[in-house]
Length: 250
Ligand code: IP8
Image 1: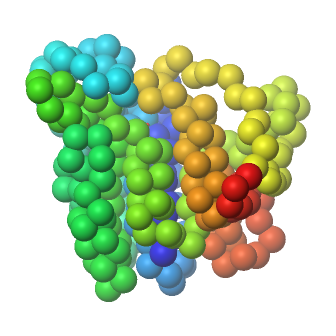
Image 2 (image 1 turned 90 degrees about the vertical axis):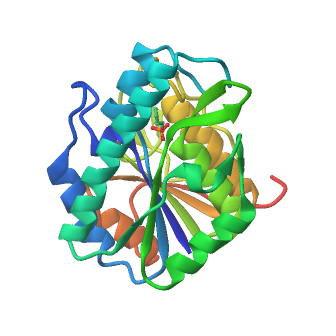
């Protein structure tokens, strides 16, 4: 089982509200078609979910947020999700839309539901889920990041590989020279904050990738603008990006 997170910064134009990068999504779909292993796709919010979450001051902390904001964030994620699903369909893949409300209860994943998604994926259908505004309980809601969903799924499904598809080549040891870090063996790189992203952007991704690799599973960061790199990562070919090597007890 492979988990693939399509980052919001690659599937949308983060500089322009509510604008999807349809051509990039199509190119990603074409590459995903070349993978013959079961997979689950998770996507982020980009200039859809994050745009509205910022407007309504909604974050990952469970709180009584403006209900109008909750409704609007959710609606915008459906809109982006539809664009992703349409592209997958057009490219002859068989997506199976799976909103996070279908497997989350409060802020915890429902194991039984997640295992059901695995069964669905094994038939060749591709479950597709996404970061979203979610009900927590007692009138509280929160923003669930797609990155966090990756960790929930990896933990329950013990996926062979988790791939975070980014708008960058991977993690850089130096932002100016864009010197790529090829492999991390448990060490924690220093990342600067991204204020536009309510779920924490790259900091969050590194946090989740580290958690998954500590559970013993490999995690790759790859550039979604060069989607053939995803195929190479899956097929164990010479790969360009950052590998968080799966290790226990590091
Ligand atoms: O972009 C957050 O998902 P992420 C989605 O994966 C929303 O962190 C609704 C902001």
